[in-house]
Amino acid sequence: MNDVAKPDTRSSGRFLLAFVIGVDILAIGAVLQLPLVDLQRAPLTLFLMLAISALTGFRPIHIHPLRTTVSASDPFLLASIAALGGIPALLVGLISILSSMIGAKMRFDATRTPFNFAAAAVSITAASWIFESLVSGTSVLSQVLPLAAATTVYFLINSILVSIAISIERKSSFVSTWARTSLWTAATIYCAMTLAVALLFVMEVAGPAALVLGVPPLWLFIAYYRSRRDHLREQQNRMDQILESNQRLEEEVRARTAQLAAKVDELERARNHLRELAHTDELTLLANRRRFQHYLAREHSRSKRFDHPYSLLLIDIDHFKKVNDNFGHPMGDLVLQQLAALLEENVRSTDLAARHGGEEFAIVLAETTLSGGLKLADQLCRLVGEHVFGAGDGLGPGRITISIGVASFPEDADALDELVSTADQRLYRAKEAGRNRAVACGFVGETG
Image 1 (cartoon, rainbow, N blue to C red):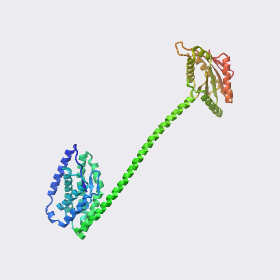
Image 2: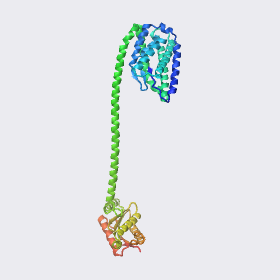
Image 3: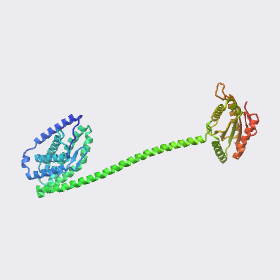
Image 4: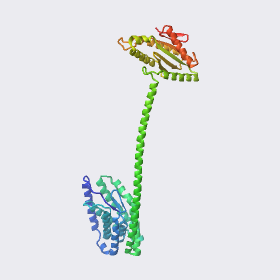
């Protein structure tokens, strides 16, 4: 595994430069501790074969977004730690680093390049020391556990140094950076160790020259891996495009749905407004004759079904023609509006006050007997007589009176038409009796 830090930025450049210089000094000190005799004792053929094989690093298997790489030369690097150790293994490692940087198309600069070589030097030196300290024999089986320990040390030191450099440069958390750059490569580096053990077996059985036979299969594996990776990436890109397209469609559908919902609400409000206009008298804002007839029929049906009483009041303004003749029709309209407001104020929410036509009004009193209807009628006659109508300051008729006919179900009539006719007859009886009064059956109410 070869890790590469990105170039330093202006804000964190000084801290990164100080860290790189420290790693460089540490690498120089580690290399100086290596005995030169290792280079003299190393088999030249084995060294050359491993060095040539390490050139496979210029075909990186994978490049992480943080610019750390998994190289095809990692198995040869780990094998060199076990087979050569010391300076020879370090040279093979530096060749592997150099080829990886070339293969990943990473530019050389005065900060990053020395750091990459220094981090590799420290990691390889420590791994070689661990391997030599633990190995107890020359057989491949006796080298497996020491090589595993050396691989762990190499992996930890290299990943920690690179993660520190990246976290300094990007001003990010070291823990999150280390997790992103190292955890995904841990399994890969231990797979490389397994291949290194296989290479050691090959060298033990067939000699160093057999390493050359391992390079073509490795290249074929890399080519297959990269082709599969590119295929999977292409599929992933297609899936991402499909998901993005679906998201756009969903957002468009949501937007259109919201627009339709707003239109539906607007149409519903308009329909309710039109319905209200269709059932409301434009002048007085009371229920109009159409709504009154519909409400009266429904109340009659309900009262008849449940055997409940209700009463009907028919109201007419006395001598209203004189108001129009003496004060004009606009003043007559104002009187109608004022009377409508007075009626609306004195009925319950369960009752209905409506303009029946012209200067006539009607009130439907739910759950009300004949005596209750007459009582309200007398009260309305008194309130109207006490109210001052007109525009004020003497403009208008001032005092007016009303006459009311009262009929109740089921006391006066069982059929709806008969009930309306009875109330209308009693209204005329109130007029004939002198106006300004309410008439219900044999009862005649009168207010001053």
